[in-house]
Image 1 (tube, one colour):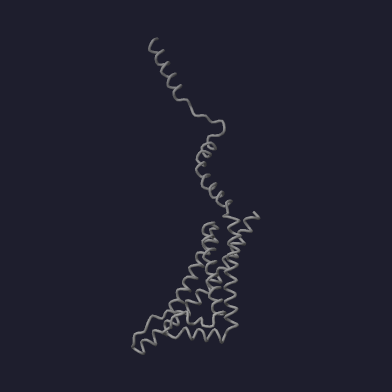
Image 2 (cartoon, rainbow, N blue to C red):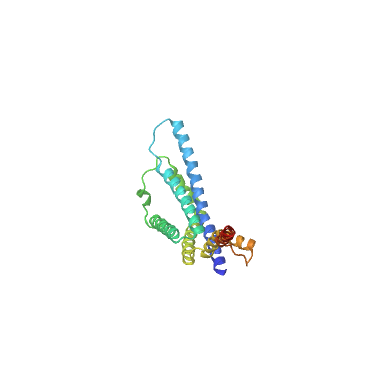
Length: 217
């Protein structure tokens, strides 16, 4: 009973922490859709062909990836399957490494902007200006997302150690086997404990002997 309560608490905590990553993904998707709408409006007004705005589509793909990661995390937390949890933790770990590599590159490389191709939409420059003007807010948001990802890995490891709820599986197996035994129990309860099936062969033999005796007499 205590193990089931601990497992339930860990599952709930993993889902809650995983939801933070999902909210960040939805925010990224909404921001990318807003940039894409503004970009298409500008292109329509200018009536010219421009290269593909890689920054907008990259942002949109990142948001979709975070939402899919959140869904997989919820499935892994609900089932408590070892393989699902392992895949989820590996993906989150790789994502943290990529985020850390990009952060180190931005802070240590003074010419980090040259590592990216030019953005025809100009939204990349707007995003940089927004981050610089609201650096503290962006810093806390980024740290919160990274902390949620780290907690997801820790809780996933704990849940993987606890394993799935085997007591529930055993209870479900017992529930499925009981109805198959009910007809036998019902037959025994209807006839009583001392009930025995009549011996029809013995009755038929005695009846034939009586007929033969009458014929001989």
